[in-house]
Image (cartoon, rainbow, N blue to C red; front, side, top):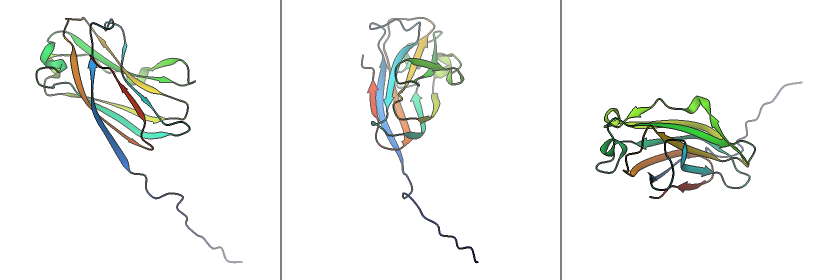
Length: 155
């Protein structure tokens, strides 16, 4: 008996989407010398996001991190609600602390990978010291899947 093979495509290629926006470090709202939420990403109910990554512009003119900070450092990390309830820090995602001076003309890229159904992911930041200067961080979030709910911090 001859073997026959047929190829089926369940879906057409899934496009890569980009969400752009701006989120803030509001030093009057929280103690940013410990991790504080910067941006939260929640897939639609029952949906999965794949190939998720985010890039933050650290050097926005006048109001960016590099503009308002010199010796203070910033550290980024990804947290997830793996069980849908509790935030857990992804240790592999923690960035190296970078000073405002060293972040001039720089960006921070974080790879989140997959955000599963009933999961959420968020980016958190920690400053080595607060200097009473709020920060605006433009971002580009790329992903494959249905449009997620993106919650930004507003100063």
